[in-house]
Length: 222
Ligand code: CTP
Ligand code: CA
Image 1 (spheres, rainbow, N blue to C red):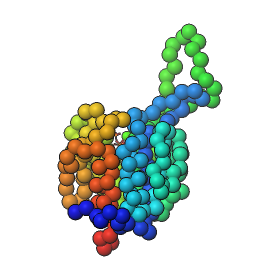
Image 2 (cartoon, rainbow, N blue to C red; image 1 turned 135 degrees about the vertical axis):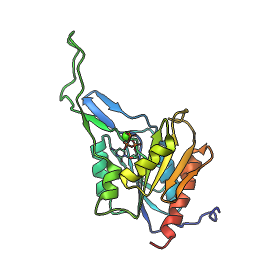
Image 3 (cartoon, protein in one colour; image 1 turned 90 degrees about the horizontal axis):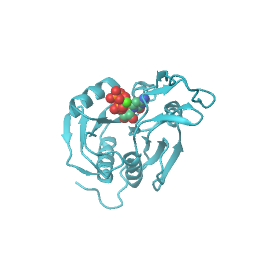
């Protein structure tokens, strides 16, 4: 059922969204990163705002305009994203769409130079799991939603991820076909009740459908 145009079922709710990649510096001029355009996360933030929510969007480095009615906090690294998320709590719901780099680099203070010898090795350190922290923390939002980009066993991996991270919902994305930077998405919504496979649709349509589901969930008695 579609809401009446202009309906604001999320009025009075504060929702946190993470989006985009993180960049993890190797030295002052280089970084490693996850592939992410930020479009799906920005679309989710915009769709939630259109349903009346106060939206805080913590965004990694992307080149996208801020959706209307959204408060945006720009960050670069996973640790900065974790801090900004922590500072935004408490919220009614958190939707973690960001493609967070799983590891950061023990970065060099100065530009690493080619010296004619062996190529340098990178030492990687695991980043904090922002979603798992929020879901297990003292300010746990009523609804915690994660995204999972998978290339195989999409639904099985997402079901396992939902349990491991204590998320309420996981939106599982099949990225074995061309999704990154593209317009369309084929997603499965994994909840405590099971798996819903949505037809292939635009990222804006995924965002609109998810925002409406979030509104329904927050309207239900706690
Ligand atoms: N996530 C996060 N912080 C991290 C890693 C992931 O908040 N350090 C969030 C993502 O924003 C997403 C969800 O966790 O909502 C799933 O991310 P994903 O990379 O698929 O999960 P991982 O646990 O990192 O597993 P994998 O080994 O498949 O990358
Ligand atoms: Ca990961």
